[in-house]
Length: 445
Image 1: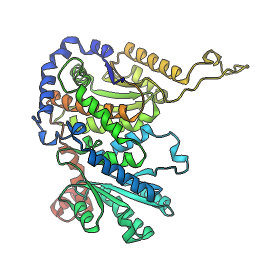
Image 2: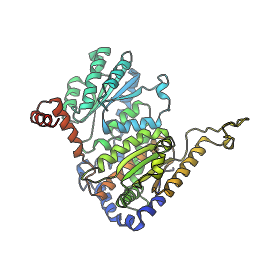
Image 3: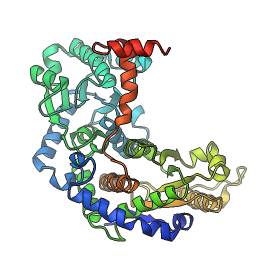
Image 4: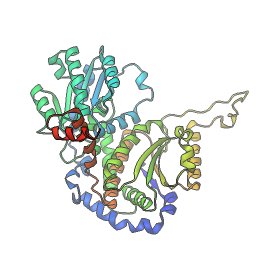
């Protein structure tokens, strides 16, 4: 079976072979830390062995719960923020028909998302849409008190209870939360909701292979067994510190480029279904490495679309960027370009060619142009878009993130800076217990 391949030849020149190779001892140590549950943040290393340790009974329970929800609903709202929704949305978007949102309901419910913003219009429009629909809720929160999902759950829970009845609504709500403590655990226990546990040793941005990501993905109709199998295969591939370990190669190269002055990494795809995968990747690396005044800034573009908006800057702007290109080797469909007798669009030279061939030549031509324009390019090739491959790709980026953060010299598993905006928001809203902070912040505005 084909697997992920990484090509750094068009990045090594810019970083320098000596600089790259000098990072090997740090990378070897990082892999040892991850494999042996050592190093900073080691209490959040649970994701490292997760693919090989997840119990089949839990997978079966997730699939059974997904089937139960599917039998009773047309829509399931997944409520969560950050890692509590991005991983699921990334996989669902990558595997779904591009126009599934416009199609009638099929065998599986359509998965919608809420709790990832505080948009009043968004929530009002969602409630209006659901007003005459059969829907269920998957609510994901370790504490149950995170503002965005808690607010969305309060609104949608009340709506569901009103539309379905309070008792029937209990069978349409699934809570994914802490095993023992927190507001959501207390509510789920008192109301009798079906629950799954967020492992204590897995942080949110690494949680897509736990029930946090697996249940919404299963509800959408995709095979989580294959997703986990792909992750397990990559777990084995990245276990040892060898030149063939793609996660180690990627982590070393991006740090070598960072040391060479490349401060921005742009994740590039040529497949529109990978847009939300890039959003998941941005959180994974931004939250893991952006601390202590350090860290590569993670950005993303969809090509060729963004070549008509960002292409000029990428080609000739400040040379502080490097690109990581995700290249999909095989399309799921074959579509050939027809001829036209008048050839008014001057496209007959493409007659008979596959659309994917045109896309691949655009990809190759862009990579050549950007390298010649002074942009280092790392290429990651994946065989196709399916559950197994996405499982591999998820674990590859997770393992590389842990290695990369340790090479950088930060704890890749905490996020202390995220709390700053929350403290200010609570103070501005007058949350009980924040009275002194409220006085202090009011003096600043």
